[in-house]
Length: 517
Image 1: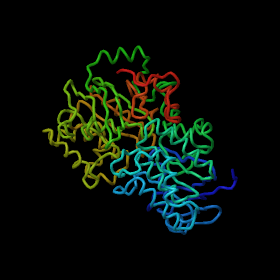
Image 2: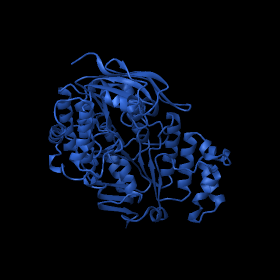
Image 3: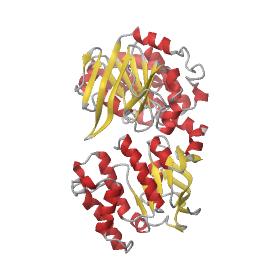
């Protein structure tokens, strides 16, 4: 294996106006190896990919291919030199067959004058290598997402790249297919191919990659082999939140005043004493022919904070979308306050007491704070009453009632989204990634409000990236992996499993795969 990197980035920096999306990134991809590029949502992974292949201009730094500076070359010229890629959003010739898609790449390879084999022979070899023989003559738009992704990979390989950039290739693959794909990656690199892998599935990253770079807020915070990355404190903080700042539910009292640590017995007694507000049973749902969640079950009791945790791509947001009526389920049941609501649209669910604050806040940026709050008057509550309640809970909003919402800080916008949701007097409040893009102190302040809201008897279902913060206020927590709930129970018990789940994509040996609620 050559020591000289086949692909390298040196001080790569990308700006969008005044925002630095990627800052001074240095990375190396060696021939004959799989290199991972990982990080939490919004870390800058895809932006880095786009800069490497020429789809995104850079403000500073260089991209080198086999020692040659290709920073000024267009994407198609980089491709001709041997830089191939796939995309996070599936890009195939959907009306062509699987074989025709791969053949298109192989014929382009022949046009470049590289390779001795015929396009047909290259296509047949790749179809066999990626397990696509049985669907070779089917149109791609009729395939499940996982198989279509393999078609995109095969087409990229047919072009004969020296370096292959893979952006979330396991999306749509089940666990068995993901394991097989890791084997294929090793076979490809044994032939000298260099692979740079952006991936949310940590089981694939840790099994396939020899070197891993970790991005957070556009900067490399750690590098090393899988074991070194898993042990790195900065990596754990990036994925789970800073337990030193917020207080780990597993080892220390919560930093949020009045929240108790619960043993398993205390947790069981607490939940049994409450009336279930949300009941989810054997729920399955997805997109097209691909099920993202499969047979999940849990309950949220009256006044309970239920934290649904797990790595990127585990199925958490899909679960929230089904519960809130934004996505149909393929099977299972959802009941709110004892009434079956599966199949009801989002508007009907909102009127029945289910209110969701989506990832990204979902405010009206061109309206004032007061005008955003007035949007909740459809419930029959007066403007005056809505504002009084909102400003009492979030005094900062009262100071900014006439300010255009889009000009406020991210934390203030999140406060506004929560205040508007509370104006509907929900029975169940759903929060998706409350901390997204916010400073730790602001996140802590928001979770103090979450605890206060639950104290009024409102049930809260929350999906959160910074797990240590939400475990400080949760009554019950669950970890999702590969579309299923892997463990569920008291926060103190679940916290012990977090690092393994987030940084290896698996649970500790012997952990139940789907405990009952």
